[in-house]
Image (cartoon, rainbow, N blue to C red; front, side, top):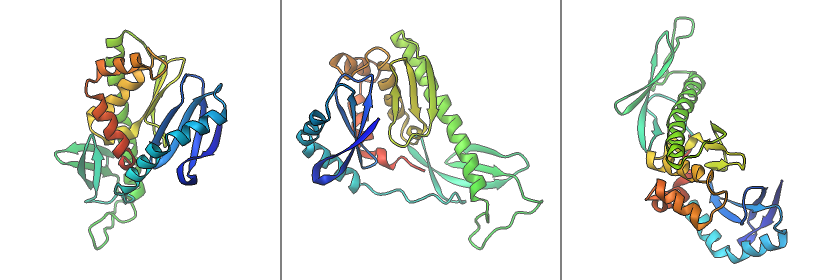
Length: 246
């Protein structure tokens, strides 16, 4: 269940009730403020927490607003695309077998010709095929995210001696990861646009919730055991997470 409260300057704050949290958590992602609160915490208390944390919330919103916005991708030859913390140049090719491959500093997307012909416009871009390029890229990003994030989840789970009940990797608009009380870990595939160490921090965070379903000192100690530099990675994600889009 979600409710909307008001934060600093009257900005909307999205409140989500959850079973697993024992304390109220606040996040600012994509310039949006979210509160995660147990069902037993009254709205009046949540509003008081919002007001108390108002300066911090306002600072985070302003910080994210100052970040450069990511222009919409056109999925055309020569465009930059992110993957694991760096930009690659998109190259579009024609082949009877569709594929996506990393080739040096390029991501090469091969698409099938239509009716044996493939028109080009004056700029050298493949005319009218951006949707085909995008669809193949999204499938490739999904496959890469599953391979990278599931491997890291299995590795960290083994280190802690825990086993998630399920692992889901997909696009989420509002959170980088979650772990249900039943042990179902969900991870946002967009995190692979960041560096590998940032992606693995998110995994370490959620795997640690298999041991501690809260954000207690013991939980953060567990995260630190898996990722000694988690504070730097957490801060980077808070500051730059809104740019991890395509």
